[in-house]
Length: 210
Image (cartoon, rainbow, N blue to C red; front, top):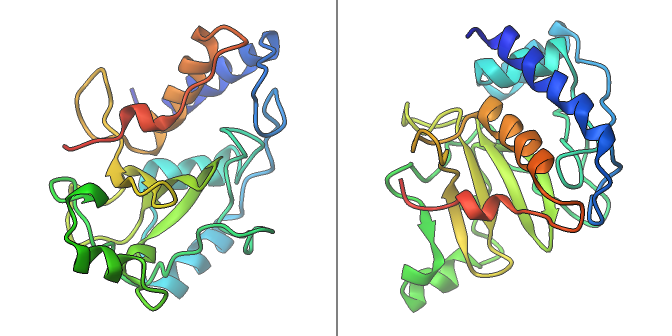
């Protein structure tokens, strides 16, 4: 199935969320979606940062929506500034320092590596990605947009340093492969539709070693 057809199927399922009434929606629910970005704005973002956005993500933000009120606290747009109260603003021009086969597991760090990780001058963990959404409590979903590793580029990761967890790729439970943006978005709508209103999920359930 091509990207446009798959996106259309996902957004059709999104409409079914109007029948749900979750107790813990985080952002506004049912989801509200903003207008898409103009091709010129997206191209300017890519040129300024010396990158090419992953094809599925790029197609979504130029044909459907640049962002919205879900998942969790909302899909962020590349034209948004720093969120009030903080957020992840990465140096997109720099390479993402991890790969699918070499994620960041805080539990495996030495004392010296741990201290360096949380050094205020350490910019390595803030490179090569854009924030997709904030789940709350310092847990984020990020999209890798600048990597020398072809398998890592375009994948979605779970970013949780606030809880001393780490930065791990999201693994598709069906295919066993690393998730890309379109997989990530479809998992959100499918998982939300299957849950009872009093239940909730976190993408942490998919984070792990590849």
